[in-house]
Image 1 (cartoon, helix red, strand yellow):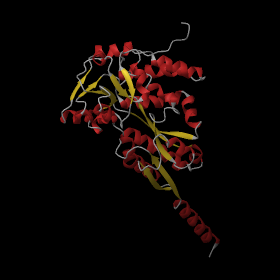
Image 2 (spheres, helix red, strand yellow):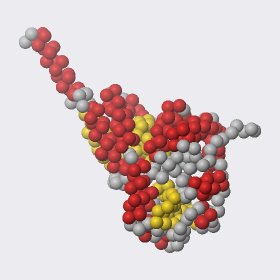
Image 3 (cartoon, one colour):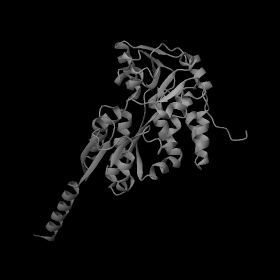
Image 4 (cartoon, helix red, strand yellow):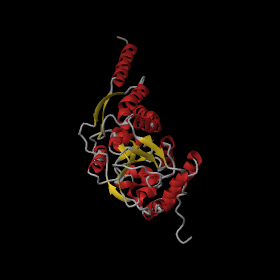
Length: 352
């Protein structure tokens, strides 16, 4: 065989070997598979990554551990950091202790009820404030994208509610992260979650509960709390996709690029606003009485609420991070894209 023929054969073998490289990726999540941010891992994220890898030298063998108990609720961050999983969604509400900078949406209720605007606004903060990227890196993970926000919050109640004063001195259940929303009102807050909301109504412990419209739909809450009211609290950030930082750095550029492309497609596919609208329609069709606070009643709650945004911003500033600057950018962007809120959250310079 001529030298040129041997060289060609060797090159062909090298190319074949490169094309045959397979990377095993474990995708892990604690939430149920029917939730949108889990469902779209299979329906959108993985197909988008695979499509982006067509024609490259990388192939992925996926292992899905979704809602099967492999990882406990809130332990996705540890699974990524320890290399047990390579990809995982990090839900904001179960990782608020770690992603405290991202709690800005919880600290600014009433600002925007359009999830398709809230999710990208968090990404814009990422682009402008390196502190958010460092927050992920401090746990050995890397934010890939796929930012999404939850559908709008509603009050499920056993009695009609036209305004916040209709629930004065009544016990209202909500996730512990949202109990500060009751500060300055006469609501009596009680920590709760999707596992306890129904039992609270069944035992008459609670008169009302705050949850997303989609959760109210999933819980069929109308058979216990037939009045479902949108008080204008808006939407909060729901989370995004992350990966093990060291593992990601070791991968080929084609795979790194594909994982980011997949995250972008995943975020766009999560049509949470439409989910909220469908949920309210479902609740209505099953007999719930769905209503909305007037603009005046929403403003009354907002204006009487303790200044949770300033408290959040000052706490971040004390940690030598740009809390007030982040708050100013956040509110300004959503004011431009979503419209003026009933209360302008701001944190002035101390002493002014």
